[in-house]
Length: 272
Image (cartoon, rainbow, N blue to C red; front, side, top):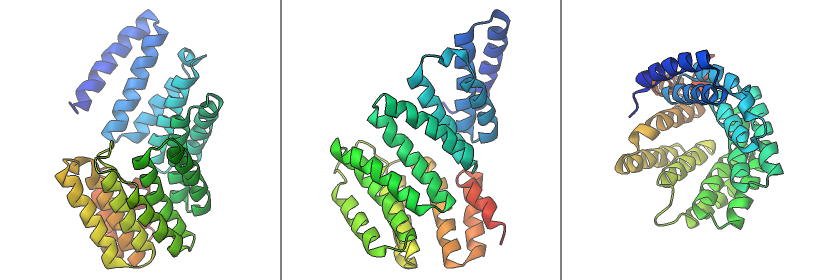
C-alpha cells in the first residue's frame, strides 16, 4: 500500500514487544522488515543501520541462503548511496554462498549488481567480465529476456572501453533476444535506456535522447512511470553531462535526487 510511515510505526511497536520477550526470530524479522521498508522509502542510510543489525542476528547461523539474500539486499541498498566498497564486500560474501550452493539464479543477480557497481566506479573492464559471466548463465538456461538485458548493459561497458563496433553488435543482438511477451514487462524499457546510453558514449546525442524518450513513453504505456521516472532523469542528466551541458545535467540530476535515483552521481556533478 506504500504507507511506509505506518509500516515503520507498526514495526517499532512490534520491536518493543519482541525486545521484552526475547524472541530472536521475531526480532530478526522486525529488523529485516524495517530495513526493507526504509529502502523502499529511499531512506538508504537508515536502511543500512537496520541491515547491519539484521546481519548480526544469530538466527542466520546455518541459514546460508537467507544470509546470501540479505547480503545482496544490503549491498544493493549501499549501492544507491555510492558506498561501493562495502557493497562489494557484501556481494562477495553473497556470491561465495551462491557459488558453494551452485545457485545460478543467485550468482547472476550478484554478477549484475557487482557489474553495475564497477560501471559506477569507472572500471568498465571488470564490469564487462561480470556481465559476460551473467550472460553465459542466462544463455545456457535459455532465459532470453534476461540475456537481452545483460547484453544491453554490456554494450555500454564496451563503449566505455573504446569498442563502439562491439557495443553496436551487442545492442543489435539484444533486440533479437527480446520476447514478444517478456516475463519481465520492464525489460523493453531497460533495453531502450541502455541503447540511449550507448549512443551517448559515442556522442550521437540525437539518437541517445530518441531512445531515452522512447523508453520513457514505453514505461508510461506499461504503467511503469513511477518505477522509471527517476531512472530516466538520472540517465538524461548523465547524457547532458557527457555532452558538456552541465546546467541541464544538474537540472535532471536534481529531479533524480527528488526521486531517490542516482544520488551519488548527482553529488559528484556538484564538483563542477
